[in-house]
Length: 410
Image (cartoon, rainbow, N blue to C red; front, side, top):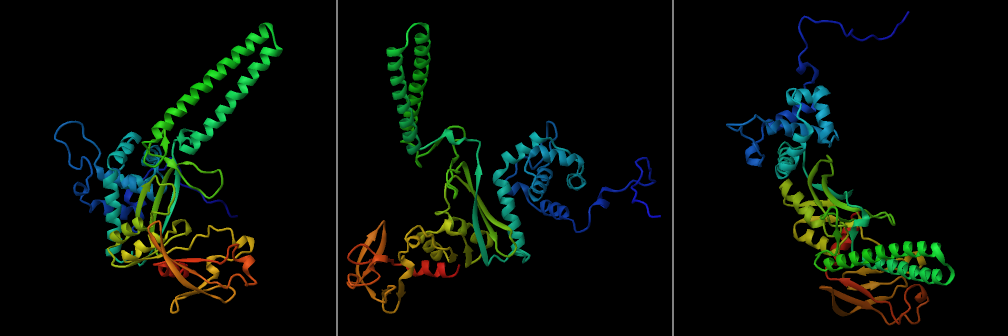
C-alpha cells in the first residue's frame, strides 16, 4: 500500500557534513552576483572603507554588503531588517556572504553612505550587459512611479492651499462671532460663562492657525517651485490621474530596454509630472548604452512638442502619443486632428473639403506658429460643429512634422 513521502530524521547523523556549496546550483543567480561584485574595483567606484584599516575593530568588507544589497534588490527585499533576517536563515545568502550576518544598522548605513557608488555599480552592470550582447538598447521605454513620502498632504503647502485654508478659517471666525452674539442675547448665568470661555479658546486657536499660515505664505515667496513641505523638505505634491488622490512624495523615473526589460537608467526627482523629463532620461539611457541613435517610447504623460524636438536634435527618435486635452470631440465638435495637412500645398483640408491657407506667422511662448484659415466658413453647413467665430483658424508649429511623426508611430 502506498504511503507518504517521508523526510530525513532530525536526529540523523552523517559521516561527512554537506558543503554549503552543494546547495547552490551551478547556474544559480547568486553565483553571477558573487562573480560580478568580485570583479569590481570598489575603490574606483567610490565605496567607503574598501581597504582594511590598520587600527581599530575590523568591519565588514563593502563587497559583502554590496552582494547582500544586490540580492535584496533582485528578490524585492528592500528592508535592512529583513536582509539581516535572511542572512541568518537563507542558504543562498549564507553562501553569498560566507555565513556573515551583518546587523540591520550596518546594512542601512552602508546604503546611506554609498549611494553614488551603488549608482555607478548599476552603470557597470549595464555596461557589462551591453558588452556581452545581452543589452542592445535599440528601443527603450520610460515611465515614472510616484512614491509616497512621510510628509502628509496637510503639511505640504502651496499658494492655493493656503488661500483655501485661510478662507475656511475666516469663515469659522465669522461663525464664532455670530455664536458669541447669540449667547449674549439668549443665555445668562454659569451656562453663559462656560460657553463664552469655550468659544474664546476656540477663537484664539483659530487666530493662531491663521497667523501660522500667513507666516508660511511669506516663506513661499522664496520657494523656487512654489511649494513647502514641513516634514520632508524635498518632497513635493505629485500629479496623479485619479481626482483628489494626489500625494506628497517623489517621482522615480526608469528607462528600460524594450527587449530584455533591464533598467538602463533611473533617477529620483521631486517634479510632480513627467512632461519635461523625456529628453533628460533619454540622454542618460543613450550615454549608458553608448549608442549613436536610439528610439524611446513613452505614454501621453510625457507629451511635449519641445521635448520631442530636443530628442530629435540629440539623435533620439521619440514615440509619444499626443495628449487630448480638449473636450470638443465629446461634444460632437471638430478638433485639430480632423483637419488634414497637405505638406506639398502647405494647406489644411477641413472636414467640409475647404482649403485653409497660410495667412500669418506669430510667436507664442517662444514658438513660431503659422496660422491657417479660409473665408468660406460663413456659408458652410458644418460651421455649427466647427467654430462660433467668423472662420475656423488652425495653428501649426514650425516643427509640427516631428510631433505628427511621433504620434503616427504609436
